[in-house]
Length: 212
Image 1 (tube, rainbow, N blue to C red):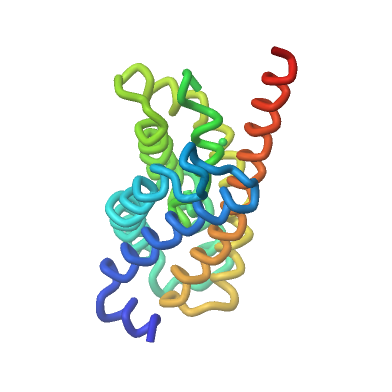
Image 2 (cartoon, one colour):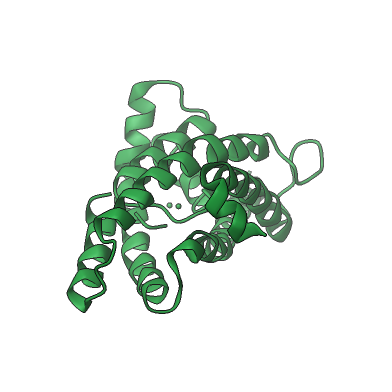
């Protein structure tokens, strides 16, 4: 059913998937880290914002970039072509989605909240800029500072994880199943990183209160 929808309505399906996963991941990570909002629950204002980002920014951009990547290498199954595809995805266009006052912590907490793999460095830049705005950045300087501070850490994670996942997909999966496969991997890793970062931030706040 899902794969059929991916074939008949690919963009709409990716938007719904990405938005849902981004929101769910934020809630799940908050629950794991026991990070409650000021109202005492795990659904913060970040949840709908992440859903909007996943559905209306990450998914359409990823859809276009991955489609271009697949078309460029359509019918090319040699080892050389597969290696070249991995290099192109990581150096030109991130398959996958951690500062001024709004930067590293905010982007770390939202890592991979995109809900699907992305293509580097184009989507990494868009991702970091979006996370800065969600975290409260309102000026070009604040957004640029976030992108500059977070770009290489995010790219390093992409360079480690995405080649392995893409190589697996090339070897064992038909192209129409790449999106759900990347969604699952990104969701698991993103939830872990998000929850871990939230725990570190809460621990730091507790230590600050104790010192005061």
